[in-house]
Picture 1 (spheres, helix red, strand yellow):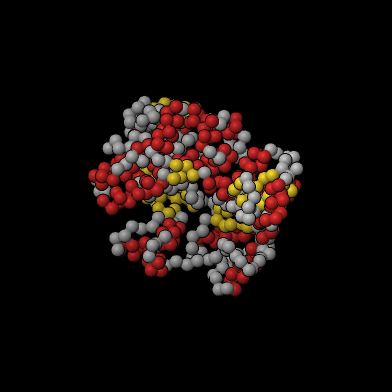
Picture 2 (picture 1 turned 60 degrees about the vertical axis):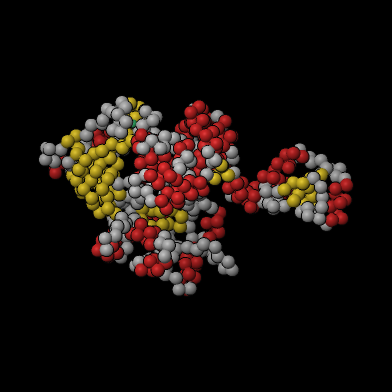
Amino acid sequence: ERLNKTRLDNQESIFANPRNAAAGSLRQLDSKATAKRPLDIFVYGTGLVQGLEFKTHAMMLETLQGFGFPVNPVIRAGLTIAAVLSVYKDFEARREGLPYEIDGMVIKVDDIEVQRQLGEKIKSPRWAIAYKFSAIQKTTGITDIIVQVGRTGVLTPVAILEAVNIGGVMVSRATLHNEDEIRRKDIRIGDKALVMRAGDVIPKIVKIIETERKGTEIPFKMPEYCPVCRSRIEKFKQDRSYINKCVNSSCQAQLKERIRHFVSKKAFDIEGLGRKIVDQLVDEGMIRSFVDVFALEKEKLFSLERQAEKSATNLTEAIEKSKKIALPRFLYALGIEHTGENAAKLISEEFSSLDNIMTASAEELETIHGIGPETASAVYRYFSNEENKSIIRQLFISGVEIENKPFLSKQMQDSPFNQKRVVLTGTLGSMTRSEAQQRLENSGALVTSSVSSKTDFLIAGEDAGSKLEKAKKAGVRILSENEFLTMLNNSLSRESQ
Ligand SMILES: [Zn+2]
Protein backbone atom coordinates (compact mmCIF):
# COMPACT_ATOMS: atom_id res chain seq x y z
CA GLU A 1 0.00 0.00 0.00
CA ARG A 2 2.87 2.34 0.85
CA LEU A 3 4.56 1.47 -2.46
CA ASN A 4 1.36 2.13 -4.38
CA LYS A 5 0.98 5.47 -2.61
CA THR A 6 4.47 6.61 -3.70
CA ARG A 7 3.74 5.36 -7.21
CA LEU A 8 0.53 7.37 -7.29
CA ASP A 9 2.42 10.44 -6.02
CA ASN A 10 4.94 9.96 -8.83
CA GLN A 11 2.10 9.44 -11.32
CA GLU A 12 3.16 5.84 -11.97
CA SER A 13 0.73 2.98 -12.48
CA ILE A 14 -0.17 1.12 -9.30
CA PHE A 15 0.10 -2.62 -8.68
CA ALA A 16 -3.12 -4.63 -8.56
CA ASN A 17 -1.88 -6.89 -5.77
CA PRO A 18 1.22 -7.75 -3.70
CA ARG A 19 2.07 -10.72 -5.91
CA ASN A 20 2.21 -8.54 -9.04
CA ALA A 21 4.23 -5.95 -7.16
CA ALA A 22 6.82 -8.55 -6.08
CA ALA A 23 6.99 -10.24 -9.49
CA GLY A 24 7.18 -6.91 -11.30
CA SER A 25 9.95 -5.73 -8.98
CA LEU A 26 12.04 -8.85 -9.58
CA ARG A 27 11.57 -8.55 -13.33
CA GLN A 28 13.17 -5.08 -13.42
CA LEU A 29 16.13 -5.04 -15.81
CA ASP A 30 17.91 -2.64 -13.51
CA SER A 31 18.71 -4.36 -10.21
CA LYS A 32 19.02 -0.95 -8.54
CA ALA A 33 15.33 -0.40 -9.23
CA THR A 34 14.59 -3.78 -7.63
CA ALA A 35 16.69 -2.86 -4.61
CA LYS A 36 14.49 0.19 -3.98
CA ARG A 37 11.36 -1.92 -3.72
CA PRO A 38 10.39 -2.92 -0.19
CA LEU A 39 10.66 -6.68 -0.71
CA ASP A 40 11.07 -9.37 1.90
CA ILE A 41 11.35 -13.12 1.62
CA PHE A 42 10.81 -16.42 3.37
CA VAL A 43 12.51 -19.40 1.75
CA TYR A 44 10.55 -22.62 1.39
CA GLY A 45 12.74 -24.81 -0.78
CA THR A 46 15.90 -25.25 -2.80
CA GLY A 47 16.86 -25.73 -6.42
CA LEU A 48 19.84 -27.89 -7.28
CA VAL A 49 21.79 -28.90 -4.18
CA GLN A 50 25.22 -30.50 -4.39
CA GLY A 51 27.20 -32.01 -1.56
CA LEU A 52 24.33 -32.06 0.90
CA GLU A 53 21.56 -34.57 1.47
CA PHE A 54 18.44 -34.09 3.56
CA LYS A 55 16.22 -36.74 5.01
CA THR A 56 13.25 -34.49 5.49
CA HIS A 57 11.95 -31.18 4.21
CA ALA A 58 11.97 -29.81 7.76
CA MET A 59 15.68 -30.65 8.13
CA MET A 60 16.36 -28.83 4.87
CA LEU A 61 14.59 -25.71 6.13
CA GLU A 62 16.48 -25.94 9.41
CA THR A 63 19.77 -26.07 7.51
CA LEU A 64 18.75 -23.10 5.37
CA GLN A 65 17.92 -21.17 8.51
CA GLY A 66 21.35 -22.13 9.86
CA PHE A 67 22.86 -20.58 6.75
CA GLY A 68 21.07 -17.35 7.57
CA PHE A 69 18.11 -17.59 5.20
CA PRO A 70 14.82 -16.32 6.61
CA VAL A 71 12.50 -19.26 7.19
CA ASN A 72 8.87 -18.69 8.12
CA PRO A 73 8.60 -19.31 11.89
CA VAL A 74 5.02 -20.60 11.60
CA ILE A 75 6.06 -23.70 9.61
CA ARG A 76 5.18 -26.88 11.48
CA ALA A 77 6.45 -30.38 10.82
CA GLY A 78 5.49 -33.89 11.84
CA LEU A 79 1.76 -33.27 12.17
CA THR A 80 -1.05 -35.77 11.86
CA ILE A 81 -3.88 -34.98 9.44
CA ALA A 82 -6.08 -33.97 12.39
CA ALA A 83 -3.40 -31.57 13.60
CA VAL A 84 -3.02 -30.14 10.07
CA LEU A 85 -6.74 -29.37 10.07
CA SER A 86 -6.58 -27.60 13.39
CA VAL A 87 -3.56 -25.52 12.29
CA TYR A 88 -5.55 -24.63 9.15
CA LYS A 89 -8.54 -23.46 11.19
CA ASP A 90 -6.27 -21.52 13.50
CA PHE A 91 -4.60 -19.66 10.61
CA GLU A 92 -7.83 -18.98 8.79
CA ALA A 93 -8.93 -17.12 11.91
CA ARG A 94 -5.57 -15.36 12.32
CA ARG A 95 -4.98 -14.50 8.65
CA GLU A 96 -6.14 -10.86 8.90
CA GLY A 97 -3.64 -10.27 11.71
CA LEU A 98 -0.58 -11.37 9.73
CA PRO A 99 1.71 -8.65 8.35
CA TYR A 100 1.30 -10.13 4.85
CA GLU A 101 -1.64 -11.50 2.89
CA ILE A 102 -2.17 -15.25 2.56
CA ASP A 103 -4.89 -17.14 0.78
CA GLY A 104 -4.18 -20.57 2.22
CA MET A 105 -1.42 -22.93 3.30
CA VAL A 106 0.75 -25.50 1.58
CA ILE A 107 0.81 -29.01 3.02
CA LYS A 108 3.87 -31.07 2.11
CA VAL A 109 5.11 -34.61 2.54
CA ASP A 110 8.12 -34.23 4.82
CA ASP A 111 10.11 -37.34 3.90
CA ILE A 112 12.34 -36.48 0.90
CA GLU A 113 12.54 -40.10 -0.22
CA VAL A 114 8.73 -40.32 -0.29
CA GLN A 115 8.66 -36.98 -2.15
CA ARG A 116 10.97 -38.48 -4.73
CA GLN A 117 8.77 -41.54 -5.14
CA LEU A 118 5.64 -39.43 -5.55
CA GLY A 119 7.32 -37.33 -8.25
CA GLU A 120 5.94 -34.35 -10.10
CA LYS A 121 3.11 -33.51 -12.44
CA ILE A 122 3.66 -31.05 -15.28
CA LYS A 123 3.15 -27.96 -13.18
CA SER A 124 3.21 -29.14 -9.60
CA PRO A 125 4.69 -31.79 -7.36
CA ARG A 126 2.52 -34.66 -6.10
CA TRP A 127 3.93 -34.28 -2.59
CA ALA A 128 2.67 -30.78 -1.91
CA ILE A 129 -0.82 -29.34 -2.08
CA ALA A 130 -2.28 -25.91 -1.55
CA TYR A 131 -5.09 -25.79 0.97
CA LYS A 132 -6.90 -22.53 0.30
CA PHE A 133 -8.90 -20.63 2.90
CA SER A 134 -12.48 -19.84 2.04
CA ALA A 135 -12.69 -16.79 -0.18
CA ILE A 136 -13.06 -13.26 1.11
CA GLN A 137 -16.38 -11.72 0.08
CA LYS A 138 -17.20 -8.04 -0.37
CA THR A 139 -20.30 -6.06 -1.28
CA THR A 140 -20.31 -3.76 -4.30
CA GLY A 141 -22.57 -2.35 -7.02
CA ILE A 142 -23.15 -3.74 -10.52
CA THR A 143 -23.02 -0.77 -12.89
CA ASP A 144 -23.51 -2.67 -16.13
CA ILE A 145 -23.60 -6.11 -17.75
CA ILE A 146 -21.71 -6.37 -21.03
CA VAL A 147 -21.26 -9.28 -23.43
CA GLN A 148 -17.84 -10.52 -24.54
CA VAL A 149 -17.29 -12.59 -27.69
CA GLY A 150 -14.70 -15.32 -27.12
CA ARG A 151 -12.26 -17.11 -29.41
CA THR A 152 -14.82 -19.73 -30.39
CA GLY A 153 -17.70 -17.26 -30.67
CA VAL A 154 -19.23 -18.05 -27.27
CA LEU A 155 -20.88 -15.02 -25.68
CA THR A 156 -20.02 -14.46 -22.04
CA PRO A 157 -21.87 -11.88 -19.99
CA VAL A 158 -19.58 -9.90 -17.69
CA ALA A 159 -20.66 -7.72 -14.78
CA ILE A 160 -19.00 -4.32 -14.57
CA LEU A 161 -18.56 -3.50 -10.89
CA GLU A 162 -17.85 -0.46 -8.80
CA ALA A 163 -14.17 -1.17 -8.10
CA VAL A 164 -13.66 -2.92 -4.78
CA ASN A 165 -10.59 -4.22 -2.96
CA ILE A 166 -10.94 -7.95 -2.26
CA GLY A 167 -8.03 -9.54 -0.39
CA GLY A 168 -5.51 -7.03 -1.77
CA VAL A 169 -6.79 -7.07 -5.36
CA MET A 170 -8.84 -4.34 -7.03
CA VAL A 171 -11.83 -6.00 -8.68
CA SER A 172 -13.94 -4.20 -11.26
CA ARG A 173 -15.36 -7.09 -13.33
CA ALA A 174 -16.90 -10.46 -12.61
CA THR A 175 -17.76 -13.19 -15.07
CA LEU A 176 -21.38 -14.28 -15.12
CA HIS A 177 -20.66 -17.44 -17.19
CA ASN A 178 -23.99 -17.62 -19.02
CA GLU A 179 -27.56 -16.48 -19.22
CA ASP A 180 -28.80 -19.28 -16.96
CA GLU A 181 -26.56 -18.20 -14.12
CA ILE A 182 -27.85 -14.62 -14.39
CA ARG A 183 -31.42 -15.87 -14.32
CA ARG A 184 -30.79 -18.31 -11.48
CA LYS A 185 -29.17 -15.63 -9.31
CA ASP A 186 -31.58 -12.97 -10.63
CA ILE A 187 -28.74 -10.53 -11.24
CA ARG A 188 -29.82 -7.11 -12.55
CA ILE A 189 -27.98 -3.97 -13.61
CA GLY A 190 -27.94 -1.60 -10.63
CA ASP A 191 -27.97 -4.39 -8.01
CA LYS A 192 -25.77 -4.52 -4.96
CA ALA A 193 -24.02 -7.89 -4.87
CA LEU A 194 -21.71 -10.04 -2.78
CA VAL A 195 -18.54 -10.64 -4.82
CA MET A 196 -15.79 -13.15 -4.05
CA ARG A 197 -12.36 -13.94 -5.32
CA ALA A 198 -10.63 -17.22 -4.46
CA GLY A 199 -6.92 -17.35 -5.28
CA ASP A 200 -6.28 -16.81 -8.96
CA VAL A 201 -9.86 -17.54 -9.89
CA ILE A 202 -11.76 -14.86 -11.79
CA PRO A 203 -13.98 -12.89 -9.43
CA LYS A 204 -17.54 -14.04 -9.28
CA ILE A 205 -20.85 -12.87 -7.94
CA VAL A 206 -22.01 -14.98 -5.01
CA LYS A 207 -25.49 -13.46 -4.76
CA ILE A 208 -27.28 -10.19 -4.99
CA ILE A 209 -28.47 -8.40 -1.89
CA GLU A 210 -32.21 -8.22 -2.27
CA THR A 211 -32.78 -5.88 0.66
CA GLU A 212 -30.82 -3.22 -1.28
CA ARG A 213 -33.20 -3.38 -4.26
CA LYS A 214 -34.83 -0.08 -5.21
CA GLY A 215 -37.01 -1.31 -8.05
CA THR A 216 -35.05 0.59 -10.69
CA GLU A 217 -32.72 -2.33 -11.46
CA ILE A 218 -32.72 -3.50 -15.08
CA PRO A 219 -32.87 -7.23 -15.92
CA PHE A 220 -30.27 -8.47 -18.40
CA LYS A 221 -31.26 -9.72 -21.84
CA MET A 222 -28.91 -11.68 -24.05
CA PRO A 223 -28.56 -9.80 -27.34
CA GLU A 224 -29.99 -11.48 -30.44
CA TYR A 225 -27.17 -10.24 -32.60
CA CYS A 226 -23.40 -10.38 -32.04
CA PRO A 227 -22.38 -7.06 -30.46
CA VAL A 228 -19.39 -6.94 -32.81
CA CYS A 229 -20.31 -8.40 -36.22
CA ARG A 230 -24.10 -8.16 -35.93
CA SER A 231 -24.62 -11.80 -37.00
CA ARG A 232 -27.60 -13.57 -35.48
CA ILE A 233 -26.72 -15.41 -32.25
CA GLU A 234 -27.43 -19.14 -32.13
CA LYS A 235 -28.18 -21.18 -29.03
CA PHE A 236 -26.50 -24.53 -28.41
CA LYS A 237 -27.19 -27.00 -25.66
CA GLN A 238 -24.16 -27.73 -23.52
CA ASP A 239 -24.48 -30.02 -20.52
CA ARG A 240 -27.65 -28.88 -18.80
CA SER A 241 -27.62 -25.27 -19.99
CA TYR A 242 -27.43 -23.32 -23.23
CA ILE A 243 -24.57 -21.37 -24.69
CA ASN A 244 -25.03 -18.44 -27.01
CA LYS A 245 -22.69 -18.35 -29.95
CA CYS A 246 -21.78 -16.05 -32.81
CA VAL A 247 -21.27 -18.61 -35.58
CA ASN A 248 -19.83 -16.17 -38.11
CA SER A 249 -16.29 -17.56 -38.50
CA SER A 250 -15.04 -14.24 -39.85
CA CYS A 251 -16.40 -12.31 -36.85
CA GLN A 252 -13.82 -9.65 -35.97
CA ALA A 253 -14.22 -10.23 -32.24
CA GLN A 254 -13.47 -13.95 -32.59
CA LEU A 255 -10.59 -13.26 -34.94
CA LYS A 256 -9.06 -10.83 -32.47
CA GLU A 257 -9.30 -13.40 -29.68
CA ARG A 258 -7.87 -16.16 -31.88
CA ILE A 259 -4.93 -13.99 -32.94
CA ARG A 260 -4.32 -12.90 -29.35
CA HIS A 261 -4.20 -16.54 -28.31
CA PHE A 262 -1.99 -17.45 -31.29
CA VAL A 263 0.69 -14.89 -30.39
CA SER A 264 0.40 -15.29 -26.60
CA LYS A 265 3.24 -16.28 -24.33
CA LYS A 266 2.50 -20.01 -24.24
CA ALA A 267 1.88 -20.13 -28.00
CA PHE A 268 4.01 -18.28 -30.59
CA ASP A 269 5.15 -15.87 -27.86
CA ILE A 270 5.49 -12.78 -30.05
CA GLU A 271 6.53 -9.98 -27.76
CA GLY A 272 5.16 -6.59 -28.75
CA LEU A 273 2.02 -7.96 -30.39
CA GLY A 274 -0.24 -6.97 -27.53
CA ARG A 275 -3.99 -6.58 -27.29
CA LYS A 276 -4.14 -3.03 -28.68
CA ILE A 277 -1.96 -3.70 -31.72
CA VAL A 278 -3.84 -6.91 -32.56
CA ASP A 279 -7.13 -4.97 -32.37
CA GLN A 280 -5.72 -2.30 -34.65
CA LEU A 281 -4.29 -4.78 -37.16
CA VAL A 282 -7.58 -6.68 -37.38
CA ASP A 283 -9.59 -3.45 -37.64
CA GLU A 284 -7.38 -2.21 -40.48
CA GLY A 285 -7.71 -5.50 -42.33
CA MET A 286 -3.99 -6.26 -42.05
CA ILE A 287 -4.70 -9.52 -40.22
CA ARG A 288 -7.45 -11.81 -41.50
CA SER A 289 -5.93 -15.15 -40.46
CA PHE A 290 -2.93 -16.64 -38.61
CA VAL A 291 -0.94 -16.54 -41.82
CA ASP A 292 -1.09 -12.74 -42.02
CA VAL A 293 0.85 -12.47 -38.75
CA PHE A 294 3.95 -13.62 -40.62
CA ALA A 295 3.36 -11.27 -43.53
CA LEU A 296 3.42 -8.10 -41.42
CA GLU A 297 5.90 -5.67 -42.89
CA LYS A 298 7.88 -3.17 -40.92
CA GLU A 299 6.78 -0.24 -43.07
CA LYS A 300 3.12 -1.07 -42.62
CA LEU A 301 3.56 -1.57 -38.88
CA PHE A 302 5.36 1.74 -38.69
CA SER A 303 2.43 3.40 -40.44
CA LEU A 304 0.11 2.28 -37.62
CA GLU A 305 -1.01 4.87 -35.20
CA ARG A 306 1.28 5.38 -32.19
CA GLN A 307 3.77 2.83 -33.51
CA ALA A 308 7.36 4.08 -33.32
CA GLU A 309 9.94 2.88 -35.80
CA LYS A 310 12.00 1.16 -33.14
CA SER A 311 9.09 -0.87 -31.84
CA ALA A 312 8.09 -1.75 -35.42
CA THR A 313 11.62 -3.11 -35.93
CA ASN A 314 11.51 -5.00 -32.64
CA LEU A 315 8.17 -6.46 -33.56
CA THR A 316 9.25 -7.71 -36.98
CA GLU A 317 12.30 -9.27 -35.33
CA ALA A 318 10.11 -10.95 -32.69
CA ILE A 319 7.83 -12.30 -35.44
CA GLU A 320 10.81 -13.70 -37.33
CA LYS A 321 12.21 -15.32 -34.20
CA SER A 322 8.87 -16.91 -33.30
CA LYS A 323 8.77 -18.91 -36.54
CA LYS A 324 10.78 -21.73 -34.99
CA ILE A 325 8.35 -23.31 -32.58
CA ALA A 326 8.06 -26.51 -30.58
CA LEU A 327 5.18 -28.85 -31.48
CA PRO A 328 3.19 -28.51 -28.21
CA ARG A 329 3.23 -24.71 -28.51
CA PHE A 330 2.18 -24.87 -32.16
CA LEU A 331 -0.71 -27.17 -31.34
CA TYR A 332 -1.80 -24.98 -28.44
CA ALA A 333 -1.55 -21.83 -30.60
CA LEU A 334 -4.19 -23.12 -33.02
CA GLY A 335 -6.74 -22.61 -30.26
CA ILE A 336 -8.59 -25.87 -30.81
CA GLU A 337 -11.59 -26.23 -28.51
CA HIS A 338 -10.92 -28.13 -25.24
CA THR A 339 -7.20 -28.22 -26.08
CA GLY A 340 -5.21 -26.28 -23.54
CA GLU A 341 -1.51 -26.24 -22.86
CA ASN A 342 -1.52 -29.56 -21.05
CA ALA A 343 -3.57 -31.44 -23.67
CA ALA A 344 -1.36 -30.04 -26.45
CA LYS A 345 1.67 -31.33 -24.61
CA LEU A 346 0.25 -34.81 -24.01
CA ILE A 347 -0.82 -35.18 -27.65
CA SER A 348 2.54 -33.92 -28.96
CA GLU A 349 4.44 -36.32 -26.73
CA GLU A 350 2.36 -39.25 -27.89
CA PHE A 351 2.39 -38.55 -31.63
CA SER A 352 5.73 -36.67 -31.91
CA SER A 353 4.91 -35.03 -35.24
CA LEU A 354 2.20 -32.76 -36.59
CA ASP A 355 1.62 -35.13 -39.50
CA ASN A 356 0.86 -37.95 -37.08
CA ILE A 357 -1.53 -35.76 -35.10
CA MET A 358 -3.28 -34.53 -38.23
CA THR A 359 -3.94 -38.05 -39.43
CA ALA A 360 -4.89 -39.54 -36.05
CA SER A 361 -8.47 -40.72 -35.53
CA ALA A 362 -10.55 -39.52 -32.59
CA GLU A 363 -10.27 -43.06 -31.11
CA GLU A 364 -6.47 -42.97 -31.31
CA LEU A 365 -6.38 -39.54 -29.69
CA GLU A 366 -8.65 -40.74 -26.90
CA THR A 367 -6.30 -43.58 -25.99
CA ILE A 368 -3.81 -41.02 -24.64
CA HIS A 369 -3.85 -40.96 -20.87
CA GLY A 370 -5.29 -37.60 -19.81
CA ILE A 371 -7.12 -36.86 -23.08
CA GLY A 372 -10.90 -37.05 -22.85
CA PRO A 373 -13.46 -37.68 -25.61
CA GLU A 374 -14.29 -33.95 -25.98
CA THR A 375 -10.69 -32.99 -26.69
CA ALA A 376 -10.12 -36.02 -28.92
CA SER A 377 -13.10 -35.24 -31.10
CA ALA A 378 -12.34 -31.49 -31.18
CA VAL A 379 -8.78 -32.17 -32.37
CA TYR A 380 -9.98 -34.68 -34.93
CA ARG A 381 -12.66 -32.27 -36.21
CA TYR A 382 -10.15 -29.43 -36.42
CA PHE A 383 -7.75 -31.36 -38.61
CA SER A 384 -10.55 -32.77 -40.77
CA ASN A 385 -11.46 -29.23 -41.80
CA GLU A 386 -9.98 -28.32 -45.20
CA GLU A 387 -9.77 -24.63 -44.38
CA ASN A 388 -7.72 -25.35 -41.24
CA LYS A 389 -5.42 -27.67 -43.18
CA SER A 390 -4.88 -25.01 -45.80
CA ILE A 391 -3.98 -22.40 -43.16
CA ILE A 392 -1.44 -24.80 -41.63
CA ARG A 393 0.14 -25.40 -45.06
CA GLN A 394 0.36 -21.66 -45.61
CA LEU A 395 1.97 -21.18 -42.21
CA PHE A 396 4.77 -23.51 -43.28
CA ILE A 397 5.12 -21.67 -46.58
CA SER A 398 5.45 -18.44 -44.54
CA GLY A 399 8.49 -19.99 -42.87
CA VAL A 400 7.01 -21.47 -39.70
CA GLU A 401 9.12 -24.44 -38.67
CA ILE A 402 8.27 -26.98 -35.99
CA GLU A 403 11.23 -28.07 -33.90
CA ASN A 404 10.85 -31.70 -33.02
CA LYS A 405 13.64 -31.88 -30.49
CA PRO A 406 12.07 -30.86 -27.18
CA PHE A 407 10.17 -34.05 -26.40
CA LEU A 408 12.83 -36.43 -27.65
CA SER A 409 15.48 -34.65 -25.67
CA LYS A 410 14.35 -35.86 -22.25
CA GLN A 411 14.49 -39.47 -23.36
CA MET A 412 17.77 -38.78 -25.14
CA GLN A 413 19.40 -37.03 -22.21
CA ASP A 414 18.72 -39.98 -19.95
CA SER A 415 19.93 -42.56 -22.43
CA PRO A 416 23.40 -44.12 -22.22
CA PHE A 417 23.36 -44.07 -26.05
CA ASN A 418 22.85 -40.33 -26.30
CA GLN A 419 25.51 -38.75 -28.55
CA LYS A 420 27.28 -42.10 -28.94
CA ARG A 421 28.50 -43.75 -32.11
CA VAL A 422 27.04 -47.24 -32.32
CA VAL A 423 27.58 -50.09 -34.78
CA LEU A 424 25.22 -53.05 -35.12
CA THR A 425 26.46 -56.44 -36.28
CA GLY A 426 25.16 -60.02 -36.44
CA THR A 427 21.53 -61.09 -36.02
CA LEU A 428 19.44 -59.89 -33.05
CA GLY A 429 16.84 -62.30 -31.66
CA SER A 430 14.32 -59.74 -30.36
CA MET A 431 14.12 -57.21 -33.19
CA THR A 432 15.23 -56.55 -36.72
CA ARG A 433 18.33 -54.53 -37.52
CA SER A 434 16.26 -51.55 -38.65
CA GLU A 435 14.12 -51.62 -35.49
CA ALA A 436 17.26 -51.62 -33.40
CA GLN A 437 18.64 -48.73 -35.42
CA GLN A 438 15.40 -46.78 -34.96
CA ARG A 439 15.39 -47.30 -31.21
CA LEU A 440 19.02 -46.28 -30.94
CA GLU A 441 18.40 -43.15 -32.97
CA ASN A 442 15.42 -42.31 -30.78
CA SER A 443 17.83 -42.50 -27.85
CA GLY A 444 20.11 -39.97 -29.49
CA ALA A 445 22.68 -42.41 -30.94
CA LEU A 446 24.47 -42.06 -34.25
CA VAL A 447 24.30 -45.49 -35.88
CA THR A 448 27.14 -46.08 -38.32
CA SER A 449 28.03 -49.08 -40.46
CA SER A 450 31.76 -49.43 -39.90
CA VAL A 451 33.84 -49.78 -36.76
CA SER A 452 36.57 -47.25 -36.05
CA SER A 453 38.46 -45.98 -33.02
CA LYS A 454 35.68 -43.40 -32.63
CA THR A 455 32.99 -46.05 -32.19
CA ASP A 456 31.58 -46.11 -28.65
CA PHE A 457 29.58 -49.33 -28.72
CA LEU A 458 29.38 -52.39 -30.92
CA ILE A 459 26.18 -54.36 -30.46
CA ALA A 460 26.96 -57.92 -31.40
CA GLY A 461 24.13 -60.34 -32.26
CA GLU A 462 24.43 -63.99 -33.33
CA ASP A 463 27.09 -64.84 -35.90
CA ALA A 464 28.92 -61.55 -35.57
CA GLY A 465 31.91 -61.61 -37.86
CA SER A 466 34.73 -59.30 -38.86
CA LYS A 467 33.28 -56.19 -37.21
CA LEU A 468 33.43 -57.91 -33.83
CA GLU A 469 37.10 -58.73 -34.37
CA LYS A 470 37.85 -55.21 -35.47
CA ALA A 471 36.00 -53.73 -32.48
CA LYS A 472 37.95 -55.95 -30.07
CA LYS A 473 41.20 -54.75 -31.57
CA ALA A 474 40.14 -51.10 -31.46
CA GLY A 475 39.14 -51.48 -27.78
CA VAL A 476 35.48 -50.61 -28.50
CA ARG A 477 33.00 -51.57 -25.80
CA ILE A 478 31.07 -54.64 -26.98
CA LEU A 479 27.48 -55.23 -25.90
CA SER A 480 25.59 -58.50 -26.15
CA GLU A 481 21.95 -58.32 -27.16
CA ASN A 482 20.90 -58.71 -23.51
CA GLU A 483 23.17 -55.92 -22.33
CA PHE A 484 21.86 -53.71 -25.13
CA LEU A 485 18.23 -54.38 -24.15
CA THR A 486 18.91 -53.75 -20.48
CA MET A 487 20.52 -50.38 -21.20
CA LEU A 488 17.69 -49.42 -23.52
CA ASN A 489 15.01 -50.39 -21.01
CA ASN A 490 16.72 -48.72 -18.09
CA SER A 491 16.74 -45.40 -19.86
CA LEU A 492 13.10 -45.88 -20.85
CA SER A 493 11.89 -46.67 -17.35
CA ARG A 494 13.76 -43.68 -15.97
CA GLU A 495 11.99 -41.58 -18.51
CA SER A 496 8.56 -42.78 -17.56
CA GLN A 497 9.00 -41.99 -13.86
ZN1 LIG B 1 -19.67 -11.93 -34.16
